[in-house]
Amino acid sequence: MDERALHRDAIRDLLARYTYSGDRGRVAELAACFAANGVLEYPGARPVGPEAIAASLSSGSRNPQLQFVRHHITNPLIEMEGETATARSYFAVYSNIGLDHSGTYDDRLAYIETCWRFVHRRVRIDWQAEGSLFRSMVSR
Image (cartoon, rainbow, N blue to C red; front, side, top):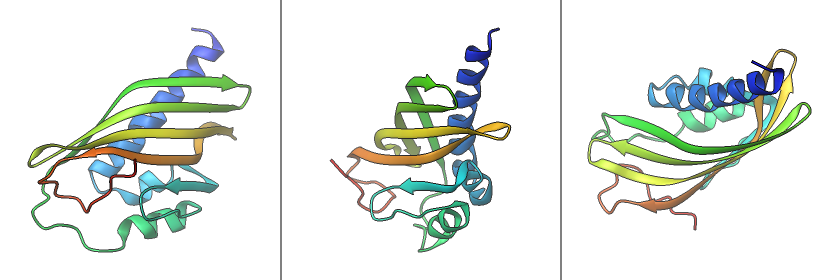
């Protein structure tokens, strides 16, 4: 496998690592996917850096009815240029109610030391079920 293919595979692994960590409530592991000054932009928040990202995702209250969460990423479009890259992916989130909400991830990434990290991840919610177990988040 050529080096470019290895890097693309490592980016796909980062996308999956983010969702697996979040679905399992491993906020520190999710935050570790970001560069030191990485930004996670999602409806209502824009924390900068892994520590602030972990704090932001740990704040507030979780709906006690929410017992099951699974993010599914599809169609990642990855464009690489040297040690930087962009990625755009669709996602669908399932919860106890079934399909809960969906949207897109728009990512800027960088190869830092030995691995890829998010420099900026923007989460946009395109649709949310009427009975969603998450707070209202539609951003389009």
